[in-house]
Length: 229
Ligand code: CA
Image (tube, rainbow, N blue to C red; front, side, top):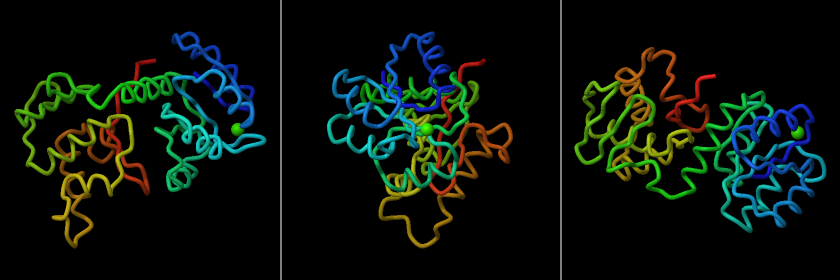
């Protein structure tokens, strides 16, 4: 994999941490070097810092996307930057904000690698299992820690879409389009109401959701379980 990072403290932590997790790591310290190394080595995953010398992470992301479908995780310095970056639609697969923990990053990396392996990668015989929540698409059943949770059709479909994309942001527009299509009329709060009901049924503390999180200004993410540190 290719790590594009100019901050020395991160470079060292990433080199050590990711090698320990079994990743073969190449480091580029600016945008120009990143493109050279990308073209020479064709890595299977790119971790890309947004703020870089010589060429911004956005430009690097665009140039890589023009050549390849490799999974790209963009690193931003502040949460607020994520909104900007996502709004520009440069084609990154996921985003992390500094400071991050290596274990958290590795979980995200594995998730994007799994997804890039194919759309069916997350599903096993029609049953999606993420953490302690399982969803059976054929039987229309959801369980939480083995206990059946009753969900009306639309709530089920919202959850299904979130779980298929576990670990990744699903935008409000995507949810509305896929679940309601042309039926979503007028009240823009309909989606929020469905999310609220799902949280009431699936969260230990619906006021502080840990499974279905809100990504402000964007949409929602079903959190993939993180390794216990
Ligand atoms: Ca930087």
